[in-house]
Image 1 (cartoon, rainbow, N blue to C red):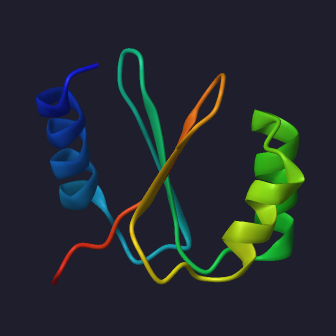
Image 2 (cartoon, rainbow, N blue to C red):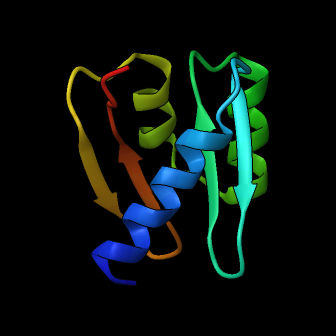
Image 3 (cartoon, rainbow, N blue to C red):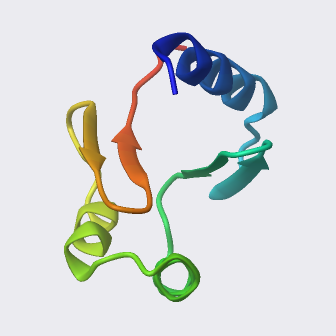
Length: 84
């Protein structure tokens, strides 16, 4: 996937974002899950459905202070901040 394709997906995600804790956007080959202040039951559901490692769940419990990208075998974990 090119940077331009990722940027296009991110722009679409920003347009479709609502004030929910979790929003899922699905395209042909990408599923974008936008989650803000996740509750424990949401984290458990994500872990069960996607097979997230415990170390990643720990990161989701505490808000990150910086942008980051971690590449796993089956998914990419990304934290992005957009000035609003």
